[in-house]
Length: 186
Image (cartoon, rainbow, N blue to C red; front, side, top):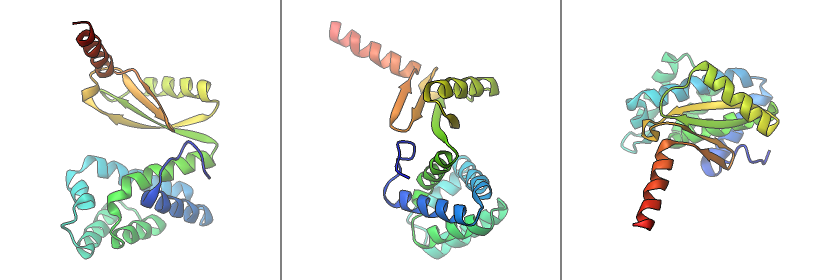
């Protein structure tokens, strides 16, 4: 499964591979995809969850109990719940975002798609997302699964990352380039 689309290594890569292979074996790819998407969205949105995942202050038992309650609230069950609880028990929950990214990349590769991350200064409209997907499909020759992020510090424009390639059309980068060019002249 080596490929440019899912460059996730180390602990996160091993766990992502294990989750993908289990989901494939259990014929539960769609369910696990939906579960990890819900978990990832909650993780991005809730600061307390981020602290729970990243902070070494919580014991494995405390982290496991809190995680179990969160998973129940998110209605995440079965394979995904067992997987995340095992990750927590093994004190590897800090790597969950990379595990999710790795799982999604492997799933996209399995489907003959490629995954890309688009970061914009503000949330993109459906029309913009569709246009980006079509442009990437034309350039790459594959369907593209987009992960969207918002980073107001870009000011305008966007960045697109596909595998190890990155396209940066952000206003922040253009202003920084202009700033450096002006320093060299003056």
